[in-house]
Length: 478
Image 1 (tube, rainbow, N blue to C red):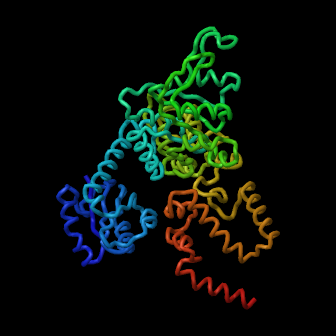
Image 2: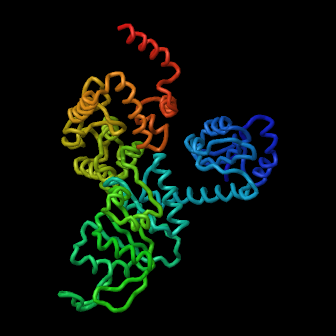
Image 3: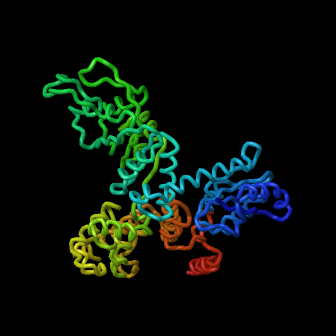
């Protein structure tokens, strides 16, 4: 089921002997007997240092719950940053039973994530993607909460919406009804949502059910909800709050109950603060928000997804072997359209490939080859010169950098300040764009330790201090 370990000095560990015995009695195994990907518990009977050391020592791919014994001192946010999934304080309210309840929920969620239902439609094994799927599965299966799905174009928002509907726990769940808010004609928008009675307007020769009626007992998915006209935002809010509506031309109120899902590539919080989207509707939609990562944040999945799309495009054929040069191209190519962009690339390759041999460089269309056009071969992992060669530079990238430096110099920022500010700003951006220091380090191309030092306010790693001191002395003497 799960493993456990106890962290702390000898005296502190002795004080939680009873807790360890109870965990063993409940079937949890000692840390040394864990299985890959299995969840576990770290019982902390000491200070933060003991907890962090224990988390690093687990080396577990599964989720880890940190349980703080009485008297243990730790910063929960720091422990979460070190890899813990949750941090709880052991008490009469949260004893061993409480720990087991969390582990059981995690096990149920992980089983669904690994099921064919999920794996067949939401393919991917990158840590960022797996964490997202766990959140989606838990919300979909164990709640009926509304969900706002955000992300760039092509990241799979409709795929996630359909998955949420498929996992919905309601026993007599009805259909998923999709409304594309970008195609709504303002003059007919009332009918689209509310439906209409016969004769309600010119051309209404028969009654027509609207989205609210069709979604009753099921799921209403509003794609690109940020494009919804203001008058319909108010009408939607009223229906969500009251659960009733009146068809166009009708005189009788009808009730409806549906799970509401919405997707957008806009920042709806910013839109609401700017007055372009109703704030009260935003908070209704965003009861739970999930952000789908762009493909550049899940590079581990690129080859896996490409093989999947290629197999779909070549029905009846075995998954082909990829030439190493093709693999390199896939991993360094930019994907402005994200997963949809990658799937279209796979289709283009499939149309050129002949036979059952490997996918070779010639199967890549000229427009998709390295250097074919700006951005075609920019490394997707982090911005910089194409191919990672510092001796070369992409014109668009270098021009943007030159403009930023020119503006800084005109504002009075000197070279020494730039040397300090650029790494700090880059580190801050990487931390904001990724899911933690480890991912930020990969984006920056530096060690995790370097990110930790900058995050803590130190400018350099210990081994670089002497070098910085020498540079300062040289500057002073010049």
